[in-house]
Image 1 (spheres, rainbow, N blue to C red):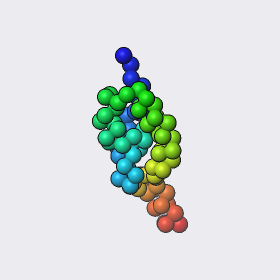
Image 2: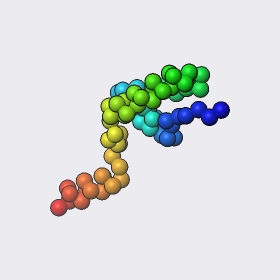
Image 3: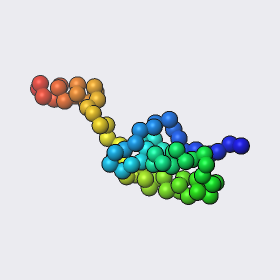
Image 4: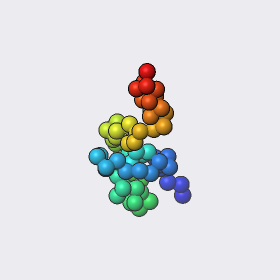
Length: 76
């Protein structure tokens, strides 16, 4: 039996919202996914687009590209 999953292998929980950056589930939902009923999984899946809209998608740290751009701008 195949269980549908929203997982995209980006498993990091946003501390602000409690949702996974990749799929939008909570850590409890991720842990319980296999034991959930198909109806409960469908219910959670329906909520995911709205949850992912709440997750802050900005990098948590300065990327190399951003640092280099900042340094070029500051040196001019």
